[in-house]
Amino acid sequence: MTHPVEITFTEIASGELAGHEGRVAVIVSPGGRLPAGLPRAARAAARRALDSRAGQALKPGASLELAYPAGMSADALQLVMLPPRASVAEARKAGAGIGAKLDKSHVLVLAGAHKRANDIALGIALRGYDFSVYRTDSGKEDDSGEADDAAESGKPRVTFMANDPEALAKSARDAAAVAEGVFFTRDLVNEPANVLTTSDFADRLKAMEEIGLSVEVLEEDELARLGMRALLAVGRGSEAPSKVVVMRWNGGGDEAPLALVGKGVVFDSGGISIKPAAGMEEMTMDMGGAGVVAGVMRTLALRQAKANVVGLVGLVENMPDGRAQRPGDIVRSMKGDTIEVVNTDAEGRLVLADVLWYAQTRFEPKAVIDLATLTGAVIVALGHDNAGVLSNDDRLANDILASAKAEGEGAWRLPLGPSYDKLIKSRLADMKNSGGRAAGTITAAQFLQRFIREDQPWAHIDIAGVTLPASAPGMAPKGASGWGVMTLDRLVRDKFEAK
Image 1 (tube, rainbow, N blue to C red):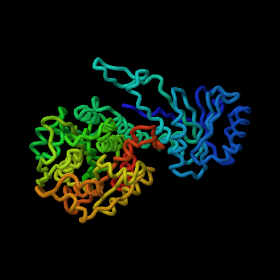
Image 2 (cartoon, rainbow, N blue to C red):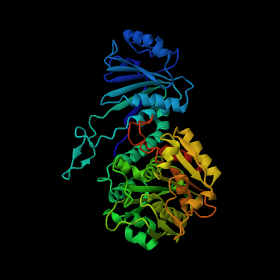
Image 3 (cartoon, helix red, strand yellow):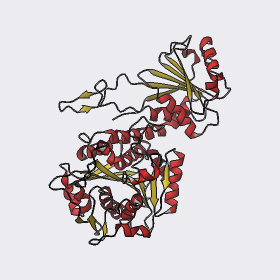
Image 4 (tube, helix red, strand yellow):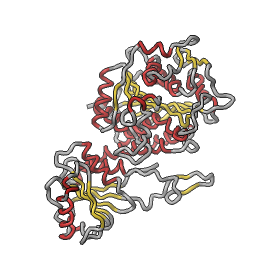
């Protein structure tokens, strides 16, 4: 697993600046003083840079870099602009600017008494992510030719100098747990499907018992006994066994849990309704919803959250072979409803239908939230900047949107309504699994809502556009974003933890 950069917190020692080898980042404010320990030549160069047109144009969180500053042993001096009253987003952006420059050197960060130092540190950690396990110069391979964990040597480290390092280190512990959860999700999404099989995925989740989670893996025979025929039908064309993994964190006494449900299609070929070849390699990310649920559960356990949360993920692979389900097949869900499969590439909702019903009947949760890379239509509607949120409960929807906004993760609510039901009406069964192109994200949610009990608060989050964005998001390099871990951790912290 990829771990966040090691960050240590110490008191300010200005005498170390001149002799520090590696990089030095200094948090500066408009018109503010430079640290006392900067050598005279470096101080003069830094002041000239800050007074220049480029320096005066710096936005909060942006930076200027001086290479090989005079009078210092450092390779670079990074001047990071951040006003004293900066927002959380600006502070994290400042940290991300430092994190984007991490290499194998030791980075010294002078944050002084900045009140957003904790967010600066989190930005460094999040942007410093690097999934390098399959690069031959940083990882190693086993006899099967598949890479295993990269060696830990030669990795960057960060020393964070602040006025009150003990208080900062204490406040940074929860942020470190969040970063671990985000990295776990990113790793899962970045893994190729020949490595992250359904069995390997389940094993990685089972290993989280070491950090205090209770983890149960339901195999195909148990799923058949439970009646999860819709889920099992999706995986019929694959050699990989379908599984459901249940992760439980009980930190909130006797309270009913929040249930998080994730779609975990480890590879989606589209099945018999096969996808075009162009871009199919990105369908390794179709387990993104399950990845987010796993990352949230990891975060809650690491920070010892005072809440009861159960995370359930349906792990399948959608492949075409002689046993695969066909367009026109009719399957019966665990709930008992029948579904006409008009498109085998609309498979994620079949997985979620059974897992959602199981989550409600077994755990009687106070709220249910599912996450899935469910529709291309959400990308057409919202691009790669916002996840789509659909819900039967205004309070839950508003809480999710508020949490996303607080964490800088884009989300936008889309409507539900009975008028859309006609698009998934089947001539032969209770419903069909696709309503076509029109309102595709909404009809997918309308389908899922049929597997939500009456009066059960529920929200569906379509993360197809934000899981593997086309360009690098602000807090991550290009690749998996980890979207949703911070939002849902914030939601649990603000709305579901015992006060």
